[in-house]
Image (tube, rainbow, N blue to C red; front, side, top):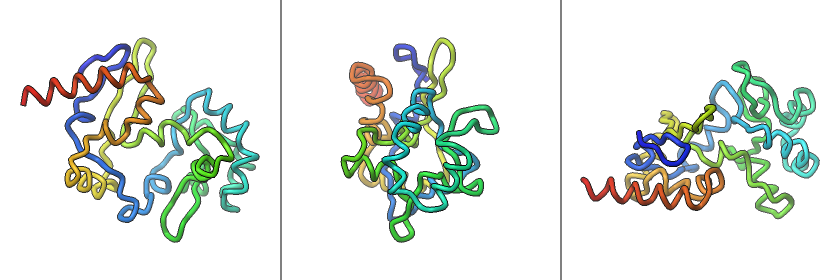
Length: 190
């Protein structure tokens, strides 16, 4: 672990390799698990605002879940998150054949909205936990992502480079440039 501004960062994000492999996992992170995607308070407001524009991209089951539960929910742990369909799929999930995709991101890709998706989804496999004085930035190892780890190793792409855009979105360009310096220093020590 090392400190970078007001963050405590796991070295795993520099040392581990990762590239999403949708052809292998079929977007399992959007349909497996026991909770929706973590959200910030600001993101809950965005979801409320964009829902009418995103709704046409969603499945019937997703629309029903959102209209019954809301565009976001308080999870069992009290955290803000996306609602689920039958305690499984994220309500915003759509399918292209057997592959799970994000309905929000599809609306973004088509220029309907200007918000890509929740930053927690964009950052994955990095998870950020906010505390009063700092944020913890960790690599979340999940067996459904084994194919992504293998592809990352094959392509030699560290986690932090795979999620560069999301890290900049969450922490800013200057923070990311500092992270790159730490990564280079670590690499030179090896």
